[in-house]
Image (tube, rainbow, N blue to C red):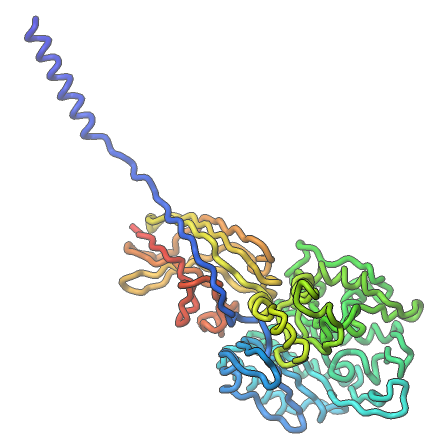
Length: 507
């Protein structure tokens, strides 16, 4: 009996050991969590920041210089300025002084096309504005220093010119960050004009219904001349209100909503350029009601500033300062409200060379470096989480926490891609995030998605990178047009990729 008990015990023990040896454990997936250090560098990112200025006259066309444009990407001194700038944007004022009463010549159109090719090779984008005159003359008129005739073209001439420009604007849209309406009036500011209603004291002091309609027709033609994903900036917010809601629209018209933004409708494509930013309570007539045939002109500063405050979140916004007289409001905080105004109206770019008195004050006041960094978007990667291994035929979950600490989001579309690069072969595989980078507004972006691994990926160790290239096939492999994160030790200048500092083993 005792022996049989011992034998039974041994059989049970052997049986138990056998079962333990055949247990298969399912491996537990592990994730890498990486945190990043913010950079204080003034980054030359596309379609944002301070811009350089160029002026080209049809009567003496001097083409853009490739070496000059490429040099703008590095720190440049500006005569009279106490700061330096590095720029990815060049504003170009094309003065059609030879064509005020005639069609644009084929030679001019060819040279414009060549300017765009020059920008493409130099790694910059253009903000074009076509005008007819940027000079003034005085006299005995009410304004004395600016008298008629002003020298701009008629509506018929302008519409024909836009029609001539259209094929080139379509072809070269890749290097056009956005356009400014221009065409009407001295400097293309839609104010001192011979043909569209003179709202100055030299004229009727207001605009009539036909004046608004003529302006709307020019804006409509320019919007149609550009691809649907490019915006046109107007000088005053009331023009957008009356374009969208009609000539009788009041100054309290509704701004855009998030649902309407970036939908390629005309409403979603009209942005703003303020050529007298921080120059006074209404910025030299920017926030003014110019009336119509049945209503008088009137101040509308509060209403139109409120309209722009909300509408500018979704469109391209930029301009220049024009005077240093609005003190102390135009100074840095806490004395003034400079940074708050940039933030309130979602500025993406500003003229680096005008007005130097005011711009220099921001150096003295200690806020210039902050303004440089925050014009437009500025993406800081805070944290990334992704698996350390995955099956070649499977999916991976990626979670990125990004802070946009800039004044605005990008205003043109571009892809956001996870890059997997084989450490041995260097082969690159791309997985696209489903996101609209134009809606990466100021604040925190949580980009958490499950991505299918790209077809054809093979076993090996892969570096993990983030890529935000230009949307245009002509530019999307050029690192000058890719977005750099504002982090230390992440940027690859030769590829335009941002290193996430992690590896995934593909099996």
